[in-house]
Length: 303
Length: 290
Image (cartoon, rainbow over all chains, first blue to last red; front, side, top):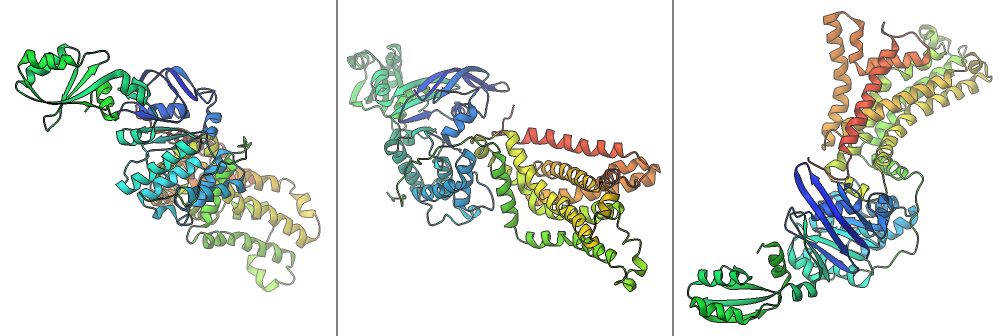
């Protein structure tokens, strides 16, 4: 495992940001998912050594997160959520500067800066002042500075924040390429489910500072529950109560589509039995493939 | 979907090295960025004016016979001794040009990083807080040394060349040390002062106003307090006067005010301590609100 944390806890004053999180983040692209305030950014910051955990331990590439922070930072790349650059610089100087600060020889850093700027699509704009860059260009620039020293792990904190659909698609395309073809492990922190679903093979879901679920996306979908989508006619409140009594989680969308999350091992015939018992008529019944959104709703309780 | 990659990604086959002085990159970049600022080169060139005037004085002092008419009324000025160097190095104009140059080169050192959230990029690298601060302070130190220590040590060499002997150095062997001491004092003070103010705001223009304002307002305040309390101790409120007192002590000259130089050193050390405390609080990889 390239990243392992055990019983990790951190609090901002009285607010608990992480509460005893134990997780293993394996190879490939891993999504770090959770609603705002779930503790995703705090976990990334602890892994980078920005924050010292109050309790617990962890390792990144076998380096201890408390003792070997410099080694970790040399081996990983970090793309922060907020816009960040050094004023008065052009892109190539900027990327080379951070390559040099990572420990690259100066000339190598400059050569490498050109390469990564071409890779992220800023080749033509690499001599332009960063102050004149658009939001999408700044996002790609942040990716370039995170890649310049050829990290083994790439931490991406909300990489598609504040981007228009085209810009978002382009950044995701780059991240997908890095994660699948370049043997760089990507840890993608996001609250945008589609981003994670389109890139990551496995996911760690945090909620209120605690680990809500972790594992390969396929396994999580298959193991945790089955999802059925129903349309009924009749007393839906009674039907809902009956299903909840049988251990199901029931959500209803605005267009009155009922989503039933059945626990592992439950019999789908129970749905029909519940309908008979409550006297409702079932108009539609579909076994749905669980999307990440459903999984997220199932474990976090947010639709 | 648009294809954004113009070239593929290739792994780098070198190895990342642990640097002995990782802050040097920050310093070098800070100096280069200063030279890219509009008007900076002109300001820096103008800042060498006192050194050139002093050089002229040194030359004339060795050729008094050739410049009899010129030096009639300026004989005192052309007496070359430690007081001559002190006059320039602890003079108000020297401080003014340092303030001008450092406003260009130093005001944005931390302020710009705060404004553009760049600190997290620095600290995502194998850099400590000390490396970052040292890198930034060294930018200020570079310009202070460039404008004080370097030219004035060279001027001693010119004096010896013009005289054609080592008599001047034999008479005042401690003078180079005084110049180096004054340079170190100015480096420490201005390094702390400029970074303290730069870390106090995210707006570089506001920092420039503060750099000028605090320095000269302290003089005005001191003058007002001296007028009210009739006590020379009130000069301790003035940053330029404290620098002059400390400078005079380093050159072994007469103190400009009847206050022990120790107190001025203490005030200047206090500014350095305040700067260290503010920088420790402001320079963080991540803003933690508790």
